[in-house]
Amino acid sequence: MIWRSHMVIGASSWLALQTLTGPLTGTPLDTRERACGAVVAAGAALLCDMDTPASRLANTLGPVTRTAARLIGRVCGGHRRGSHSLLFCATVAGLSSLTFAHAEVVRIGDVMLTAGQLAALAIAYIAASLSVAGLLRLHGARAALTTAALVAAAASTTPPAALVSAAVTIGCASHLLADLLTPEGIQPLWPFSCRRISLAVIRRTGDRRETLLVLTTALVTIAIAGGYA
Image (tube, rainbow, N blue to C red; front, side, top):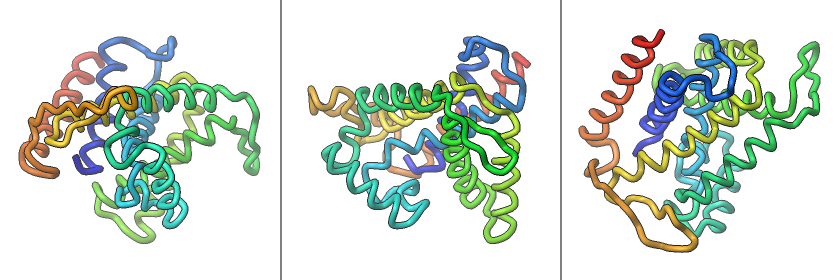
């Protein structure tokens, strides 16, 4: 799937699960916190594709992220192998839980943030910048201002560690489910098994079936969220 589809499915997965199962963090969330979780999940949904420098996420920070993608690709054995496995998702979930639960405070001017909240804002910034450029078709100063406004709104929620960790985990897992529907499929049990599994609902990346699937997912999520509002 293309990166835009993964972001929509990641955000939709977070909102749907949050609505159907109740607060995943143990405490009720307000609208801003739900939106913050959706943005983080959308960004986290791109993490699995950090196994190739050709991915959109790998090109967000130029040589820095492309180099990181090459290293991750070598460790994972190439595209759609180790980074598209249950082990990778479990690792991301574990690391996010440890990182976002870190109590150390970082001071930025008059703003006090924990290390976890700062990491969450970094994910939110990447997700917001990609959304503004790819989905809203904004560039230059307008894109910068819109991205800054979105990230500021996310920061104002001071999201709890459990919310961010849950959003990252759900976003990452949604990527596996989405790619399972493509002809290439995924290797969920890597490195214990290299067997590739595919449902092949989508014939090729970005085709009409993918567009219809993503649109349906978004509309169903909106209906579910609206019905429980």
